[in-house]
Image (tube, rainbow, N blue to C red; front, side):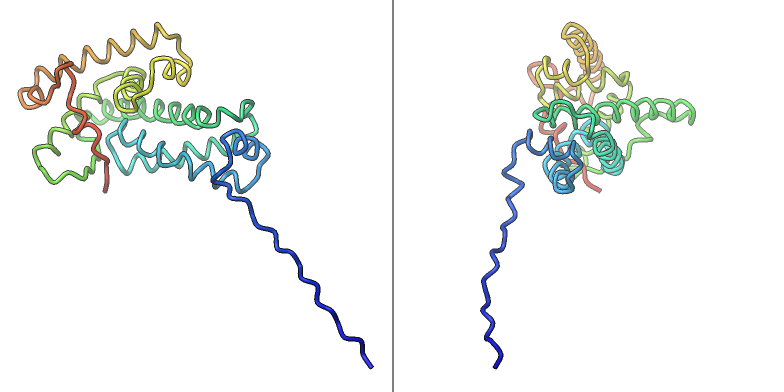
Amino acid sequence: MSKARTHTPVPLGVAPDRREASHFEVGCALAAGDEWAIAETWRRFAPAVTMFARRTLGSESEAEDIVQEVFHGVFKKAKTLRAPESLRSFVFSFAIRVLKTELRRRRARAWLSFRRPETLVDLGVDVTDMEARALLRRFYSLLDRLAPRCRLVFALRHLESMTLEEIAARMNMSLSTVQRTLRQATDRLSRWIEADADLAPWLDEDGWLLRREVDQPATT
C-alpha cells in the first residue's frame, strides 16, 4: 500500500516594490547591472528628461530621439556611477551633454542649408489658439539664435526652475560663469522679444515671456 504524500505549502516570495527604493538603492543596483534598476531608472527620470528636451528644443519628435540617446548613454556608463545617491544628477548630466551636441548640430544644419533656424523647428504644441501657437513658434526661433551653452543655461534656469548652484553643478561650470551666461542670454532674448511687435505684449513685469506660453507641452 502506497504511503500517502503530504503536501507542504511552499512559501511564495513577494517581490519588493522597487518604486519605494531610494535613489541611492536604485543607483547601486544600476551600477551593478540589475535589470530592475534599468526599468526603474527609466520610470523615474524619462518623463522629466522628455519634458526638459521638449522645452529646450521645442520639438516633440526630436525630444523622443534625445531621450533614447540619453538613456542609452546612462545605461552604458552606469558602472561609472561613483555616487549612487546622485543618480538624478548623473542622468541629467547626460541629458545636458546630449542636448548641447544636438543644439550645435542644429546650428550647423541651419547654416549649411541656408535656411532660417525656425524653419527647422518641428514644434507640435497642444494649443488650440492659433495666435498662441504662432507666438510660441516665434519664441523658439529666437532661442535658436542663442549659442548652445547660453540656451541650455537659460532653459535650466527659466524653463526648469533650477537654482544657479544646481546649474553650475550640472554643467560643470563656475557659479560666476553661470551668472554671466544667464545674464547674456536673458538680455539678448529680452531685446529680441521687445523688438517683436507681436511678442512684446506677452512680456511680464520682469521683462520675460509669460510662462503659460513657454511651458505648453509639445505633442505631435
